[in-house]
Image (tube, rainbow, N blue to C red; front, side, top):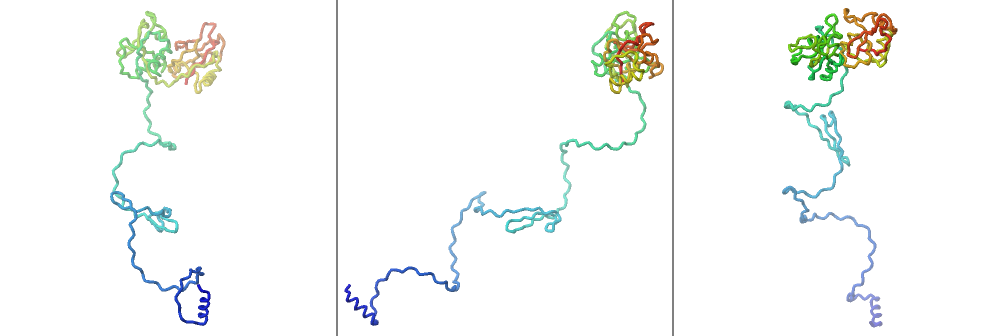
Length: 388
């Protein structure tokens, strides 16, 4: 550009020349200025037209056509509180549901309906366990007096095996029955009759013990049957007692060698044999009360047997060697012991005291301790037979 021309143009502008010239090229934008203060809000414009619908969201087809949308956000946890019957909000009870944020809802139980008819009774259930026993009730009034009857023996049976008249004594005979029929003993005549058995008697008969009769109630006769059931010798002139096939008693001599069954009974005798004392004593037992004390010390609750008690107890227990002391019994005074005829009432241990004692021997029969005129045997030591 000509410098002089430029100067001339500027001079003309300075002099206020009003003649407009042609616009030049726009200059470059300047830097943005600071934001001015906000102006007052203008009036609300008119509502625009409704926009077009958006595309449908994703759905899940469930159960043959039921539309289920996407799972929403978890709601606030709820707390359920039971309301009792009689609550002001729910007279018949219900529940209070509370959520975070204070939301509450009450769900009440409805009014009870009318009770329907009773249903059919169901099957009985399984029995429950037995409960604890209750307290013992008061004693009731006494009943009317019953008829007084005597205990009766029961017939156990006839032994399958047969034996001669040597049964090992009366003790052995009881043991034979106990082995064939537990807790039974050899029947005596009275017991067999009382038992009213309908069992036929074996063809050869059955051994039966002798009975002392009305003068000796409950006592078996001592040695009159095959020598106290120790003899099997034929033609010995010893008595054999047995049941015949008609159920009656036969008392015959010279038949102790014949083998027969043994008649066995469950006795009704009230006595029980407890045992023989382990200690041995002379005829001085400290009197009869001392003898009872020796038995009670050996077998609690027992006493010194008399002959009748020992025989009635029908013990199968083997007798110790040399026998065992038993008290005498007054056969003509039922149940009474004789007074002083046993080693001076069991206070004397001298060889010659004028009266001896009684003892049960190995066969279960009784023997007087008398040896000779100079020796009544009270100095001999023997155990005591104890009963209850």
